[in-house]
Structures are given as structure tokens and as C-alpha cells.
Amino acid sequence: MKLSADLNQAPETIRHIHIMGICGTGMAALAGMLKSSGYSVTGSDKAIYPPMSHFLDAMGIHPMDGYAPENLSPRPDLVIVGNVITRKNPEAVALAQAQIPYLSFPQALAHFFIKSRTSLVVTGTHGKTTTSSLLASCLHRAKLDPTFMIGGIVRDFDANFHLGTGPHFVSEGDEYDTAFFDKESKFLHYRPDIAIITSVEFDHADIFADLDAIKRSFKKFVSLLPADGLIVAHLEDLNVVEVIQDAPCEVQGYGFDKNLDWSLDKVHAEGRNTHFKTRFQGETWADLTVRLPGRHNCLNSLAVAAVLHRIGVSKNLINQGLSQFGGIKRRQEVRGIINSITVIDDFAHHPTAVRETLQALKAAYAGQRLITIFEPRTNSSRRSIFQKDYIPCFDSSDLTLIREPMPLDGIPAEDLFSARQLAEDLMTRGLQAQSCPDTDTILDRLFPLLQANDVVAILSNGGFDNIHARLLEKLQNMHSESL
Image (cartoon, rainbow, N blue to C red; front, side):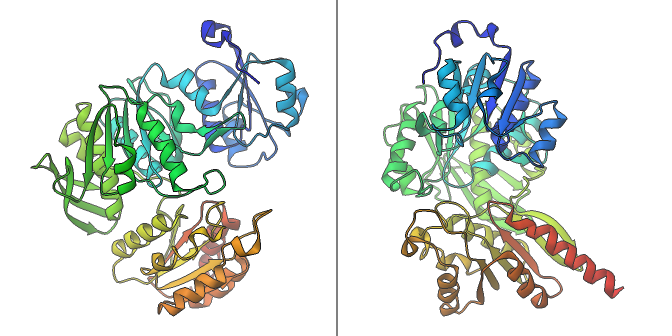
């Protein structure tokens, strides 16, 4: 399969765009951006259900249920192929036979929206969604009206995309692969002018053989920066230091080390707000506040401040943007407080993200008991790769319940993650922990243990059997019965 050569030569001939795998979060957002730009958009998927079905319906896009050759009739001018589509997919086979021009998701994003704007790309193993959301929100509050595509719902926009009138495009630079016909990382298509690199660790064990493979991908990304570009890099991460060694542009380092271009000092938590002092090139720069808990979010904010400073945003507007940030759904999101028990939803799954998230919540809710419910769900977290790495990550948790994950097909039992083993290791460490076979068991065991002022942090990158709503419903019922 090859992209037809006339796509760039005659873009005005494109009217009807069909999207395969349209119900993915990013694909649905792209559909909305294209629809808002005046294109006729159709799509197909095998799993059409809320909230994405409602999201698409509201835009007048009604996906076809399942993949079939008939979905390409009437013949679209262009097809965008999601990375959930395999080479043997019947619709993909029909696409090849019909010789219809096609693009991957990141190629389409670059072709229709990035290439005409200054591209601000946030990359790294951790913190991409939060950092890119902070950047987009600060640009918005500075009246620069950015266009963006982000992997989470940004509360300042109540969406994960926005078509702005300003000169900047903010993207979450994902290192995951692009499509079945392009196994390179998505972020290699995003034409970066300014980039943030938050961290580089091993992840995505289903597509990367080891850490070196991930580093090679990040090095390719770094090589894409223009000579007059800028990389804002967390240089306290030695893997980041390695991948930017041959950068073709200026690199500004950030972290806690005062010898870096940008540094943090005197971090102070006040509830879910965090205050910190900043230095730039050895001089005191500004006192800032971010409306998020945790030292890691101060680092994310510092990187954002560095980019905004580069493009001319004032210190005052930077602080306003950070301090008024509305947050992101599923990132330390308070889902409800009932009978003084707080239920929080978070996306953390990699060991580093789990550790940083729990440390931040423990500081934000000082003096309250922190209960963690953890579901390993990604391809990496369901393998034994991180089995031992998880052990010190739950030290901030007063009680941890771990769900046994669904096994991965084709992976030997000895190479799979064990919730039972992690619970035993945590107890050996002097922590309270239990493993549970399923979500029902977690709720049954949790509920009798809950006390006033508890904070329950639910960590999963999936829906987790609607555990948040079910727990809140049980708490509400208990509260009503006590009245």
C-alpha cells in the first residue's frame, strides 16, 4: 500500500474523508477537527459505544459498525487508518485493492493541521498529557488561541482538541507506533519547532525490545528539530541527556539542579496547589503556582514556562495560566467526595508514574489515609518486566489493593505480572496490601475498611469495570441510610 502522490499536489480535491478506527480517542478528535474544517467525514469501528459514540453523534458523524469493504462506498477521496487496524482487516484489504489515497493518524494531523503552524511537541515517557495540557491552557489564557490535540480531556476546553486561530499547534508526542504500514513512532511525523522531553524510560514492551530501542526513536525525533528550534529537556534524567547529545538546535535543561538553565527551588504544597520558586540561567526568575499537586507537576510547569518564555509570554501571564489551570480528566481527578471520603481517578500505570502520583496525593492530603487501588492493564504492566520495580512505588499508600490482570495471549505464565506476588512483596516491606482476582472482590474487601477522611486513589489506564461510579454509589447509599 502506498499513498497516492497527488494528495499534496491537489489538496482541494479532497472532500470526503473516511476514518478507520474512528472511535479511538485521538481518531475521534481528528474526525471532529476535520469536520469543523469543512470536510465530509465518515468512519468505521468494531466497538461503537459511549462516550465516543455520543461525541461523534453530536458532530453529525455516525460510524459504521464493523469493518467491511462496503464502508468504502461511496468512494472517499482519502482514508485515514488508525493503528488498531491490521494488514488483514477486510476494510484495509479493500482499501489496498481500490487504490484510494490513505494516511496514518499522525500523517493526517501533520498534513491538515501542523504544517501551517509552529509545532510545539511535548514528548517523554511520563507527563506528556499534563504538560501539553498546561501548555495549551496557558497559551489560551494568554490570548494566543492555540490549536491542539492531546490524549486527555482538558477541562479548560472540555475537549481533547481545539481548532484555534493562533500560530501554534500543541501536540502530545507519543512514541507508540504509527500504523501497520509504519512501525515508527507517531511523534516522528509532528514537524517539531520547539520540543519538551520530560523523561525517557522503558515502556511499551509490545513494540520496543528494550530501552535502547526507545532511545533510538527519541534520537530520531531530536534530529528533526530545525537549527533555530529549541529543546527543553529534563537533564536530571540521564537517558534524556543521552538522546539530546547530537541535537541540531539549542537545548535548555530544567530540573532541581541550579546549574541547569531552568531550576526549581522551595517547592511548597498547599492542598492541591503547589508553589515554587524558579531560576533562569543562574538568576531568580519568578515565583509560580500550579493548580496541581506534586513535585513532578512543578517540573512539568517549569518546562511549560521555558517554552512560553521562548515565544514571548510574560511571567505574569505564565503564572496566571498555571495557577488557573482546570486540570485533566483521569489525571488526579476527584470523581466525588461522599461522607468525607474522596475518590480520585488517575491514569498512572508505569512504576515511576505510580510512585510520583502517590507521593503527590500523600502531600496534597496530608494527615489523611491514602488507599490505592491498582489495575495493571497495559501490555507492559501485565508483564513481569516491572514486577520488582513496582515494589517501592507504593510506599506512600497506607493500604493497597491490586487487581490480578487479564493474561496476555501468547505470553508464558512466568513472564506475566503477578498481583499476588506484588502484594506479598509490599507486606514484606511492612505495608498493608492485598491482591484481588476481580473488581467485585476489590469493592467487597474495600468497603468495610473505609473510614472518614480516607482518600481512595484508583490507578488504571482503562475503564476498570466502572469501579469509580460503583464505589461512589455504594458510599452514597451508605450515607443516605445513615441519615
